[in-house]
Image 1 (tube, rainbow, N blue to C red):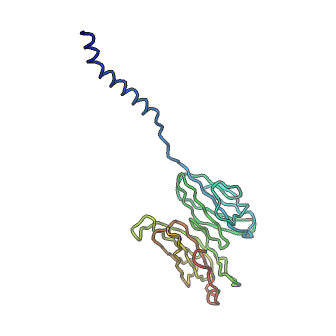
Image 2: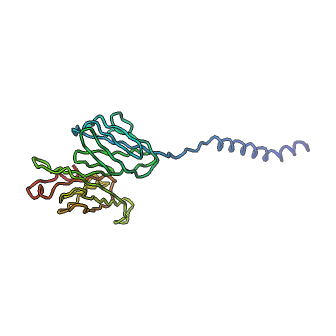
Image 3: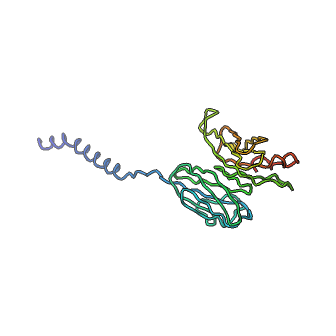
Length: 234
């Protein structure tokens, strides 16, 4: 009888040890997922810009754009575009082509994400910016102006997604400049400034922005002659 009583008294402790053992095993088998330390960037064009092969340089690396995608932006890694994989951060880029086209600007890369930059026929870049260029539309002889851009997130509206873009006129002409910023609701917020002289700047900002923006410019004389920019954001 004493042996039986000892067993009954110690049995709860045995069961507790078994439970702890299996719980420890379950915890050991749980894997911890590591956060990504790099992100992807893609540079692309939506139509044949007449530039030939476009070479893009980003953080000491280079890639070529050899195709255009008229049906919409391709996925990162798609052949025919300039693709890059870099640690998250904001990087300056330059692009030039065998046909004499040139772009420059910056792009923000998020770890684990895919950032896309469309190079347009006005020298501009979407989702990060770039060289602005003249595109008055119609039969206007607009200037392919030399524009450099910078941007920041100044929290003008009290939010971290308030985007401010500055365009600088690097040409020797007086320009009209328009900055178009895409908002998170899908609309575009556009600002226009006349009489931007050489080495002068235009700054425009918008609340709740996606980070995508476009720069347009034309000579003041072309604007005075009746040239118009395309629709806001197009």
